[in-house]
Length: 399
Image (cartoon, rainbow, N blue to C red; front, side, top):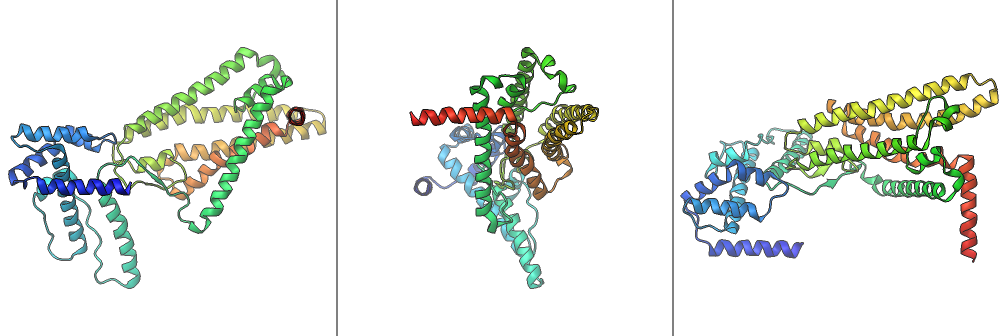
């Protein structure tokens, strides 16, 4: 990457040496072509390529100038940098504001940047704080005047640098155990014929289902019913994720390219977009109210009915066993849906970044980790099936 960047820089330098100097009329016409809506939209797009500068070069030829795409690209970069340096100088100086050549025309395209904080007449502590804010603002100014970004950097728990290595190892172990537990559940369900029942069919698809009248479970959950339920879950998940992904792909990101999260979550990425995000936020809100909230309420209603049924069990021992199973399931449901609803349905109200990270840990890390333990590996039939599969595997290894 460094060698290729050096080559590009050397080629640009050679190109500037060979190319004749730009006249004032040429520069004004270049800025005029640059300011055309079609050209601006392509430059703002994350899919811009050499064709954009070919289009600019053609626009120059239409105005009677012979400038190739590379010359146009280099000149645009020079104009952008000159305008940026003028803005920086104005922010760091208490004197009369300076202007660069073609300042008004460039301001119409690049926009007016906010004034930078002055560093005069400040105490040492105030100066340090102002310097920090200035650097942060300059970073934003720098990104806004450059090409639109297509790569991002995850900050993770960047405010805890001393815990970076321990957190990495912790999350690595958690994700490894999570994957191993879910894969083990899937293998056991497929390998043991005794587990080919509706309940374990759902567990094999990583779905957890609560049903009213649990004593009638076997009669109600016929093969076509659980097949339709699982198919509907997969189709709904695929549709919602694809829709949000397509809408996100239409957004333009102009920096900075740092995502204040440990994965590319929805809300932190929207904060980096310089496009109109009202549509995708509205779609996300509609999907949340149409899918997340109803499924949570339906699941909670089923568990309430289950608890009411358990309370009618005459045996104290039977009630304790049923409550033990039902309460653990209910805790997992609340742990998953609670943070999820807060994150995606109330995030538009301005949820703090650190709070959003903590909530995300619950439904992306904690819940998937304990799901195999709560729903599968504690089950007596699954334990017996695990022993059978383990015995067959041991016999196969010995043979």
